[in-house]
Length: 425
Ligand SMILES: Cc1cc2nc3c(=O)[nH]c(=O)nc-3n(C[C@H](O)[C@H](O)[C@H](O)COP(=O)(O)OP(=O)(O)OC[C@H]3O[C@@H](n4cnc5c(N)ncnc54)[C@H](O)[C@@H]3O)c2cc1C
Image (cartoon, rainbow, N blue to C red; front, side, top):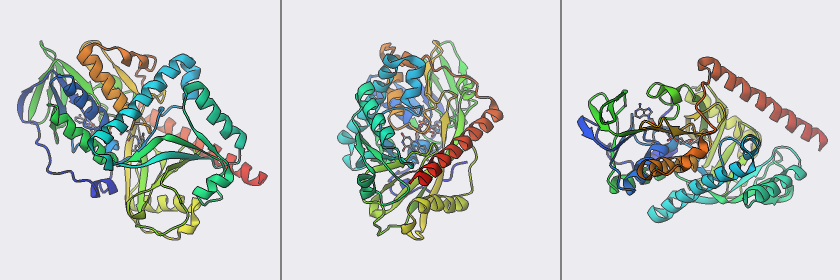
């Protein structure tokens, strides 16, 4: 279950709902799912002259795409060290380059479409234990291995920006930026329609059947006949395409937004995060409100308890904030594959998928949508770089319990690292 009242919904002009699909319709491609993966695929297909219909079960970007932290940065949900250890440095570099391509695509679409969607530049990643050597080594390795520029900040420089004894050194990524994700998604939708794609809301795809010409995608009131189908449903439907549905675990994460604040705890407009594995991520947004995200679970809490929980986390880092009122608190569902990498591929018979972007989807959904469009429109095969990351069964409810237990273990490790650091201080 995802709660609906988000700060993003309150500050984006959605306009009237698009109509639901009724009766029969034809297109070369039917995209299922109106999050950023599906919307980007529809836009890029249309730009390449391919007729596309997109079916969205509820409202466009109602899922993670319209309710996330809004941080756009290079890389994937899985760290580059893990990817390089599995595939080797050269293949990891190729994937990193694609992830950068996703970031730059989003930046360009905003500049050309509506620059006010961008809310700030730069991402400061702070560590919660004292280890200058480790942070400097990470910064150097990112430059050496991936050409990724980052700037090291020592404890004093970090605390000049974030006034807390919880944080020690930090690294600033000047290539990252943050934005209003729902307004971005709605802009991509408008561009897709401008380029000729047809988008339908309240049109849950119920079934996909093989036909002579390709596929028939059935909704409650209509049916699309198409040559190709692209599944972009994340973890929100695990039945419509069982090979990928079985390979995705739903994982919830949470955001709270305070009342407008007058404060001296956070002195920067950078996007910010800390080193906890299920870490905190936050930023100042319009009117001086603090948007605070964090916690990861395979369950979803009640919103009231959620607001209290998020406030506790916030005050554990910045007690000087006092007792801010929480005006908005919501949950969102991500999709994770067993290997933490996106699932991007095809069965070679006209069915394609771009899903499981995890908690790092703002650049990778753009990249995934474009790879799908290029492959379908022009036979481009760059999507095959994701071939090593095949859909693997995640073990049903036991898989979920395993993911939850894994996070609890990582959270415990974080706390031990931090305690060691406090003792050493
Ligand atoms: C709280 C939160 C914070 C996050 N913060 C960040 C961040 O700061 N930076 C970052 O890079 N990433 C972040 N992420 C991750 C990012 O939001 C996701 O990876 C990304 O939005 C996934 O996009 P998607 O299109 O794959 O899925 P979604 O946005 O979930 O879209 C899937 C869509 O498919 C539709 N659908 C499902 N089944 C059907 C069907 N049968 N028929 C029709 N439609 C269907 C759904 O209704 C939904 O709209 C965050 C995620 C959350 C939840």
